[in-house]
Length: 426
Image (cartoon, rainbow, N blue to C red; front, side):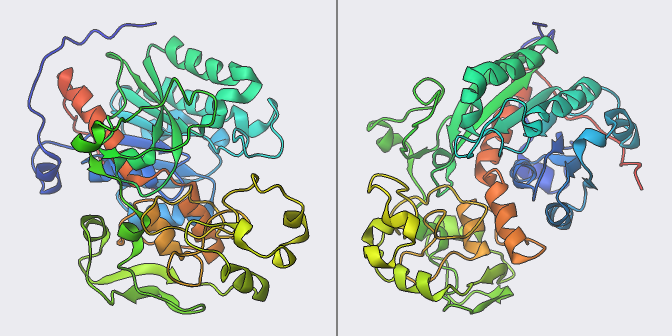
């Protein structure tokens, strides 16, 4: 493994606030592969970084990315058909100029929830395209994220191949599984995070909030960050579902719009942080439910699930299920708890999507709040696509915590942001 040659020198890094106000120091830069709607890029932007290029093959996601990050080149193509050299030269960049290359391949082929998992699934080979970009750009650091299920594919062979390939390119690689709720995200969501650096090992960001969740997957006992009861006194409390969405306008089924105004004041720091100072937000429409689901929902108490529903009202397949199975299906969220993982479909058959105190399912905006997207962030495309974009995203505040950790890593090694030219692409 190549060892970085930079000497350790502690310096003062200009604050993100100063960068946002137009200080002369340029921001650190990123290139975002498999960018989706831009959760990682938004988190890094909030930490003071500038995204130069984002790529995804989903048209609606790229439209959303471009709308919210107009400064970046948004490229809607399959990554396997892109020449990284042409991208780098179009951006006017020398090798090694980019500070962080971020992203992760689509995770459907890796997920432990996938019905079938094959080593020859073409989606499981997209990491090689990520490696092609690293070879060409030679970024100072990288962030590779995915689902923890990647660890178990082929008894870990795929995962070890990925880590070994990164190490062979001269990067120190740290491996961890992060819990989104530790970083102020009101959600039980785990992500596998690989951080690579040419200088030294980058430690994952320490938890800032006290939250616990079941790490019932491979690596759950060795790669996760644990918090104790003593930490409860030192860390902020977790952000609850009620904190996250309680101030948004209440809706009946079929009410709402793509642009809505607030109807109440913020009632907690998280909501205040998320709200748009212009007094409006987007994508807040309450979809109608089928007659069967409306009836089922009435029987589910906060924190409950399909097990609260009379057997005769359940779908035929669920009537035969064991009470220990599918614990989140037809679930109702609790105001004082975390949400489950935000899914790509707002379908009660998939998970807990019923609100704690309203007889309806989550709007796109409420799902976005649970992913820590600010209310200024607008999702484009059909509503089905909007839910998919939100569910596929990396939580913004988790990404921001990683971005801040990388900035501290640069500071420790005396690495300053470099001036980069404006993109030359059309």
